[in-house]
Figure 1 (cartoon, helix red, strand yellow):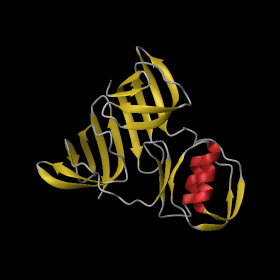
Figure 2 (cartoon, one colour):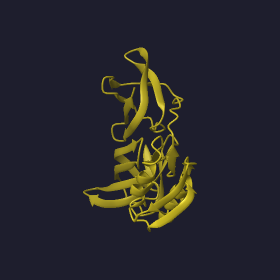
Figure 3 (cartoon, one colour):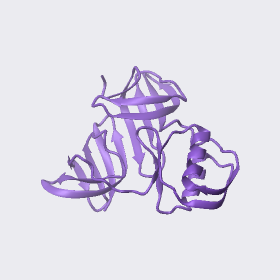
Length: 219
């Protein structure tokens, strides 16, 4: 098995960028095309998986250029306007995700909206609009493709990583490829021979061809 594969297509270069807020994306170079608009499993040789949808593919020389987004790739779809009265926020969020065909994960939003009017925006924009009324909540598409909404708990990442390159002032770090790392965790490990706290992970970028993981943290 290649380092990363999608069905029979082997991935030999590219980036997977996972932000703490929003939808993660991937720009990859592959040996073969993959189906468009179909939920796919990106599988690392170490066993980690990412659920994504290929939204664009094109042949460039002897390889294929693939653009993928986390989840079902339907958050850009426009919603029908809808009026709610006396409904908890989590039901409004689940409703919009179901309507466009995205899978809901944990959705934290027990607050009841006395009145709420959903406009004809794309789903991601309407989701952001709901969360403006829930300022302590965030959202992102998880590696399994489901949409999570909730408060950040910042659990500790179970592995202590050794940084290859680091800039503590900017919260910018490089590690050997760590496919299981994602935003929303607190990262600790070693740098320059000392035990350190890197911080709360805001964004992770896996560089496939370089076998490296780039991390941006807040202290």
